[in-house]
Image (cartoon, rainbow, N blue to C red; front, side):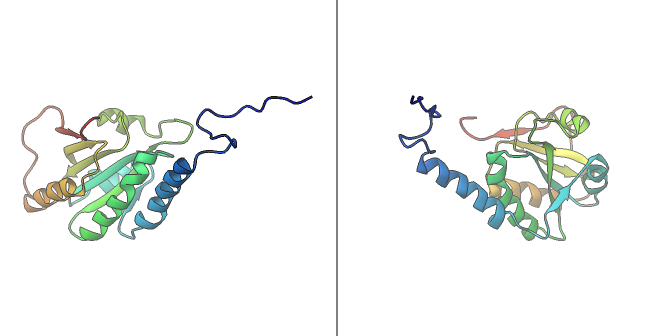
Length: 172
């Protein structure tokens, strides 16, 4: 007796995932392995590390908050690696994984304090205070401009109060 083979709706007639999807996934993995490698990129591991590396830093810190297994976060990682190399000695560029593969939030305090609801989220800290926030944004030149401004105004505290200015990518 033959049984009907259950095939995922995204699969082609052979029961395998389409080639386009496989190529996309391999591109994401390649970006993670090749482009994201940087000796200067700081990896924040926990709350104590966040406090030491970000909040107590004596220079501007651009930090990428990510979720494990997030393909959009993986696309941003090479950009963060390049920025870490470009700004070595003048600013810190870091990554912090806030959610693991089982969707467990690893640091509720940081997530709530900085209103991180979507990944990737990037925040620029100057003297321990958040000054700019980007949500699902990939433009390296915007990050460069904000870092340059923060470096130029090193001794200036962020002005104003209230919520952080957010920049969202078009269509998001």
